[in-house]
Length: 384
Image (cartoon, rainbow, N blue to C red):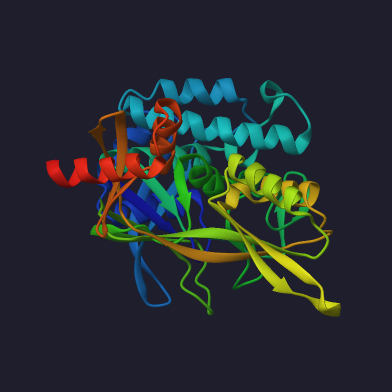
């Protein structure tokens, strides 16, 4: 699996994305040939430049057939007629515009087919999105990941007047994704850049375990005094190393919840996708014995799990913090026991029978769970 990891520490835009991928090894002239087949009347070029002394590639889109706005079907026709663009790159570009259209429809409260693409329907945005998809395809990328996104701060001028950063469409696109604001007071992440990673990235957080093949820097238009205005693209192959992932930790101190409520809440949370749920005894204020409820969650599940904690326990508030979770590489294989198959979880530390498989067999066959666990472990050691 070839992965592209975007470091959006100075934000992300469409031209920064194309520049970073060309800098990382995508053949720039081939990318331009594909973009010319869009027949937008634009010219394209890329050049080496520097941002805070760091070498980077700046991608330029110049001229073209500008319109006040375009609808999604019009943009789809433009992409479809690009004979030099691969089917994979076309589909990814269409998916990005669909995601963008859904965000705009939500922001303006109109049906998707009535959405007017203003800035993001312009020649440069269409070229940037298609160019990014072409470059990823040329690099053989099948998996995209992204760091937490620096969106910037302050205000930005749009077709709808002056708006706070992040712009409404950008905020909608990055909903339930990790974002922050640092550096100059300006827009660092554009709707185009947000749409690219919101659509293509399967993971937001720390760098996944990779064997790095290449890196590249895409330059933004400005050269800031406080940070290098670049987007870094890291291209590599996934490895079996321990993986660092970003999680949310939800905690609540409870001093008036019955064991029945706590047990039920734990079951609800696990069924709703919590990575783990624990209960720990506490000695709370006024010498009251209590319980610390801790929930580990994927960032995108935080709101849903928080709602369950508030509805199913007696707490009137909870704490939410971000943490890094290290996950060892693992794989699964099946072993045969006298009562049926059991999955074994294989890591660098050994092999462990899957509890749910063993429990299901024990209940179905009327045998002790400890016997099923022992037989599964024996079958693995005997065969492997």
